[in-house]
Image (cartoon, rainbow, N blue to C red; front, side):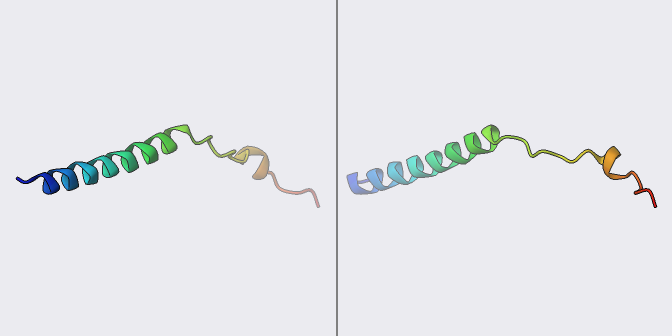
Length: 47
């Protein structure tokens, strides 16, 4: 394998690993959505 092929392979693998790590960390650090209180929202309105 020549030098340019080795550099291309290493750079492309590093880019893929960086994208994977970035989105993995992003998914783990997002705050949870505020879920509505289903019990109070199921109450019927008084007529």
